Length: 193
Image 1 (cartoon, one colour):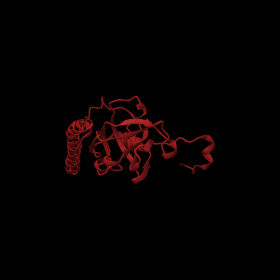
Image 2 (tube, rainbow, N blue to C red):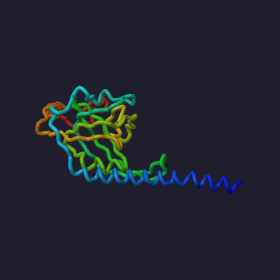
Image 3 (cartoon, one colour):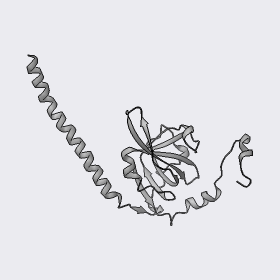
Image 4 (cartoon, helix red, strand yellow):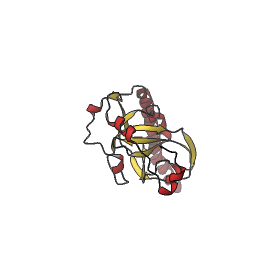
């Protein structure tokens, strides 16, 4: 009787193993098709964006759904490796600073497989229309931007580059940008900074 149950279990597990392998193959095919399309970056004009759907970075919280951004990458950091305790493996991350049309800044991070897909597209100084991702509480020890939240862009995040030559939103913000400093830290600031 035990042998019969073992045989039945093996028969039931075989289709599951096949489905699991099929799922892995499908993911690999998806990554291949994405990597083939990576070189074909679509660049749109700012007037092609429905600005009614765009939210400011200052409005983002962990409760924000359907994130849709019009942002400029002000700084892109080198890729780093770290040990992911949750997944019990080596992982990679790439972070960059974003600025929206109001001048508000926030850090964004991408991990592992998403790096291959988005890193070649996301370049410092360029403007992007980004849909997707989610917000997490920001660990202010690891960032130069001291906002309460940071963005995580994942596998489903859609990125479209905007023609920065036609953009008029960010030119004014870069001239007016200021750094907020605590009064006790003023002695560390350079004059006219």
